[in-house]
Image (cartoon, rainbow over all chains, first blue to last red; front, side, top):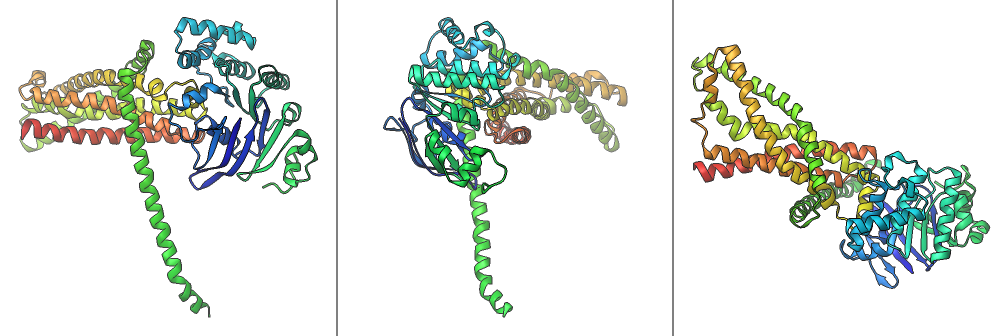
Length: 246
Length: 277
């Protein structure tokens, strides 16, 4: 279980998160939605120590983790994988080497053994034929699949997806949706997804939280969001240009 | 009425203005202290991982090629022209005063070895190498690649700065020794061609001794170490998108040049007290 309690974060004079309280259950597909710049990615980066809160606490299975050192966070990052918005594959490494890197660092395996395991992971996402290709030669959808393979190498209990379908064609986007749902259903992986993609949100989410002006606006199931009378929520989920949202 | 209200509010407004200005100064001081602490932390971690970090020869060799081989033509051209300008102005001034040019070669070689090749050459390298390092690491920061490295349990300083640090220490020293030679040759040819000075006096090393050589080489080594650390720091602290990368690059050049000048002052002063006083 993941728990954010009274989380506050500012960048300079700009307050991004202002007392966010969210609890995410095990095995859930949990979506974080909201306008651009509202702090969705900032929120999930706190869980893996890429950002540190100004105030508030973060619990991972009842262990308070917000005050850990960078080295202590390595253990948390073994349990929580993250698929970044831009795939973030290293251009100087082949796809196979990209996937092998966390295996070598986290599991302290030799290069040969790590490459063998990395190859198996690429097979899982049907990218084995591109093992020796450099990421720059691949399209966005393929890069995203390699990035997911890299994240899954550690068999994480929690996977954080930062806008996984942004920039993908509709077919690739739905394939990513299916992959996320399968992770939760088959492997009982908790998936936390930051997204604007309404199709994804209303097809695979178990629960959704909407952030607005640094606070939780609504936390609930898909049906609760559909039924919500809150004009801010309604404007967001209908994608209307007119409304009370600033 | 309005004058009365204005008089009543003015002291409060003034104290508010003063408080805001003091807060600005305080915030600036805190930011600078944080930046200095982070730079120091990167320096210490670079030294640590240079000894205890991963061993990947390919990364260091690639960085050597980028820093060394790719800077060779640029540095040769610039230092050649700098040598020509220096000798041209020196000889012109000496001709106006005494007209005796027989010591110009010996004093010139001393100046080049002890100070000039290292300080001017390293600033030229800061513009090319420093900007490149900051731009590359800054781009990785804004596209989350550095965060992805951290997610892979890899230390960004170990992966991104240490290979460049090792390569820069070696290649900057080699390039700056080469720059000494280039300045010497270009100066000699200028004096010979324009002032009819015998070229042999430019190989008169009577005024250069171990102390000059030690000071010059220490500077080469120190500047070679400073450029990747300062530029790496600027890259790792990039914030924002393309504009942030642009600012990181600018800061890398400015702060690397400043670092070389500051180190030059420290090393020259130390050498003065150690060797000459």
